[in-house]
Amino acid sequence: MKASKHVQRARRQHSRRRAASDLNILPMIDMMVILVFFLIFTAVFSRTSILELNLPAGDASVPELPQGLQLEVIVREGVIAVADRGTGIMKNLPSSADGYDLAGLAEYLKSVKAKFPDKVDATILLAPAIPYDVLVQVMDTVRIYEVPGSSGWARVELFPEIAVGDAPT
Image 1 (cartoon, rainbow, N blue to C red):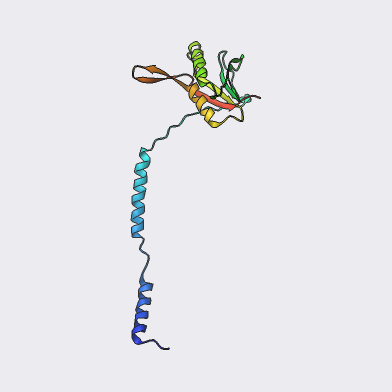
Image 2 (cartoon, rainbow, N blue to C red):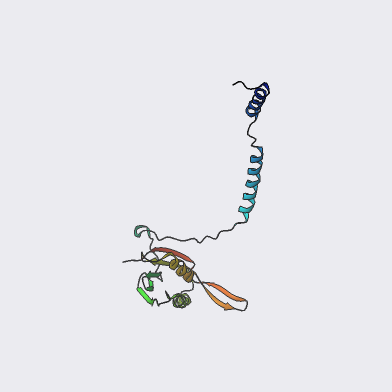
């Protein structure tokens, strides 16, 4: 069956128009430029806080340290032990049903800081099964303590330079 001349002409014009049209990507490029500027401006105002950790080196590369306190906080299942690397455990703080005794740890570390005011470093040693949340809480307790002041709570540094390692078995 033959199509009429009008139908044939419409098909030809339709095929010409379809072949002549290209994809217009200019609006997409404009949007990408706007998005790039938006991301740059918002990235400038984002702020992250980073806490530097000093990981303990292997036994072969440890330099000879002068005599004095080498503070270690050892976290195991059910107990936090405060120790000196040279002399051994100074205090054991058993955990209760509420969790680890972080308040007792802070009080004891305040007394240690009073005896050794120039000491700024400490090592936190963890048993393998200790959760990451406990590590963060112990680190915060070892680094600073809060005291009530005239304008709210004030933060005082205890041992801000922290190294993290595995607890001895």
